Image 1: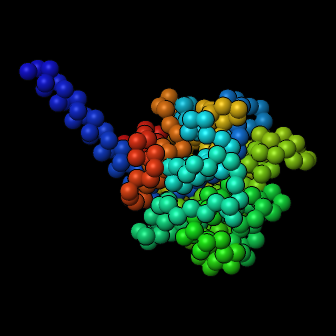
Image 2: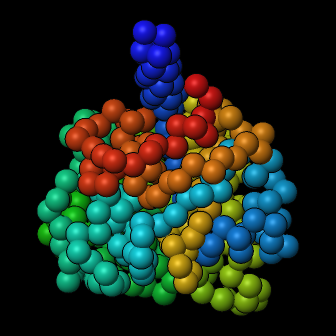
Length: 300
């Protein structure tokens, strides 16, 4: 009998912890997600090329030590699709939006249905058309939303819906200052600043990304949207040559922060499940249904 009582008590504690975690995530009001490229966490943590990440962000943040891209999933595009929909839909290469248009349920479609605002900010786009083509150091491969027909109105370069949601990164600071940012903000830098491509004058991929973060992150952290229970998630699309671990850094007034880290196994589906919990949108998409959310990085 005692064992049954103890087991019942343990189950009650587990259920209470899950409820507290969901409640903590649901208190988040505004989300910013930054995705960088192609580095294992071991290349970033402690790197002399990443002083802003290591000396400024990590002491403030919570972070994961065991965050992976989905098993054996490469290259970039399938991983971005996982962040948006919990699946790569059988795509195992970097396809153009013109070659792959998806009709499946995905995150921003659920946000639209729930009346929750969202913006996808990208460095190097003009904001004058739906960015379906590679232009200089912008690539649609890092912009998963444009692979869905409901966003682009089936590859319409003049789609008003797409243009309204796909905005140049340069608009972010003004929107932060005027407190008009959307509730969900997906942010990708150029291939130079995403740690993907060596670019002059530095020709140091990690340093290029770290310097870019030093410009982009402080306006987010200083904004009203962040300070009123916002959350910033910084991650990488994939490990190279394996599956990671890759970085997941969480900054939020609601996060444990102060350098907290854990060794819970996470994937991109964990991030998607976390976003769906924050915004209260269902059904859980693809692998997010069985993933562990990032709730442990937040205060219960």
